[in-house]
Image (cartoon, rainbow, N blue to C red; front, side):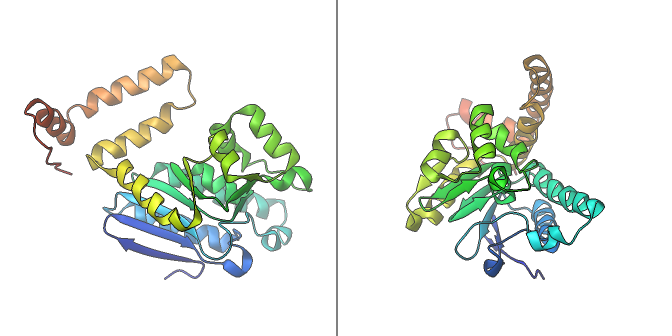
Length: 255
């Protein structure tokens, strides 16, 4: 049902694979619209995890300049709004979203990685905000990247436009793990399994709350977290988890 991506399910995991290898998985409006639809579809399913991957030699080269160059100001604004809606949706769906990164992830491709909840990179991966050495600065891709790597590292990445390797991306906090290319799928599966175990309802509420409090002042963050944690204590999964601990048995999750 999709032209620019592949979507499959294995058990509790949905895999969304960008499938424009001839265009280095660049993000045209049609491609972005399909990604948004796929994440919304997966988000309403009973899956617990979503893997975002790319077919071909690279993860994603970012925006499709052929599409961008053909647009006027309003058209580019609409394109960037669509891209922003995708990034927000990836963080708002109840499932854990993990990026499976190989090859290059540049500009909006790097933005995709930073917008995922988790990311595993192959040793072959590279990351860049190349607008700094070109003509169109990476303003929107820098938004989630800044929240992953901090100001000084963001400035270096965005102003130089240089590509950093996977080891540097790990050191800077852009990805969770770096593994040999041949171990990429295994590492993605292992981290996703560990990140999705337990109560589904509790995990979903936890993800939403983490994003809600993440960049707020400490007092505001505590106000949000306190109320949500109190409410979450009444969920069936929380009740079962506490009962299992007290009774020294394995929990039987109701969701």
